[in-house]
Length: 196
Figure (cartoon, rainbow, N blue to C red):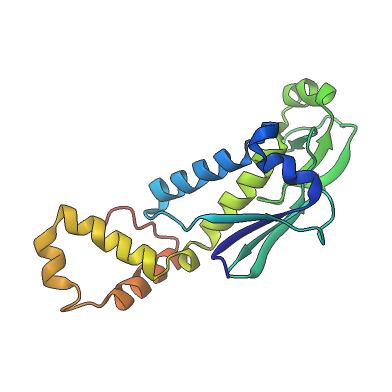
């Protein structure tokens, strides 16, 4: 079972197909890099696959096989998200922003500029999926920190403070204990960037 998975319906395959100028793969790479900079460890890779059992425009995000988020995204359309102060009525399909639960509309390209001028945040299909994934990674950061990630942090620290690590791990604190302490910090919303 993959730690992080993204399943896409057949209409969303173009988002991950570089030959059709799909940019979701590079966006996900950026999401992982940003997560590492903010939270303090590189999360596991996201395994992407198509799933014909999903609705054509549906995607599903899973963590260790359990679904943690799903929504629909429509290639060629734009998601106009109301941050709370936009009052203009838009012609489109009403929905909810999957990452933050804000009211939104799927609109066509011709309405994009008007929506932006009216105070809506307007994003493309790949951004919707990448933002949803990023948000769920932040929410589930503790579950993303496995033994491999904990060992990677220790290896990195060994380069910066070899004597400290040699004195502490595993003599005083096992990798398993360190992993659990770091997971508890992440559950409390404490980032583990600075481990010196």
